[in-house]
Image (cartoon, rainbow, N blue to C red):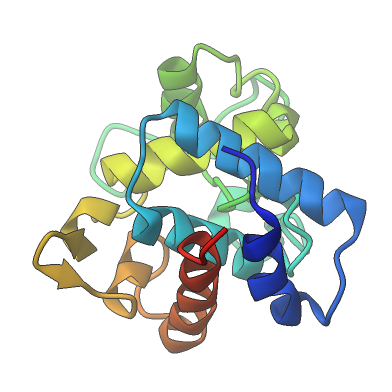
Length: 195
């Protein structure tokens, strides 16, 4: 499902009036993965695009977290231990699980479980979360399945509800919710623009 000329014309102002080839490639990869997942609700597609636009500093390409987890426990070699909230050191793999991708996947356990879900060794190769297709699949699985915060796209976009603001809870509470809602509505206008 490639983006149409009308789609790109509508969203162009978000990008300062022009796109880099890298931005177009990123958008097209995301649209392809969303279509392959069977998602046909343009509101959900728009919200995922807006999330990437925000989380990846408008690059539309997967990025590594600025600071690579410095100052956060997920930026240290820690994983879940025996008790709830109890973290213990690990030595293998010799990797750190700071934020990577379109939605900044973090923590040892999240790399492990998402890797199993996608049949990719993200635990052994966390840099694979920076591959655009893998990053898009992580985002789609996580946002559709509510795997990041327990909240899913289906909670905020139903036949009777369109909640651009609270959909941010899928990723990160209400942090920048109004701003991202505005981006999402622009992407939505583009996706539904007459071709």
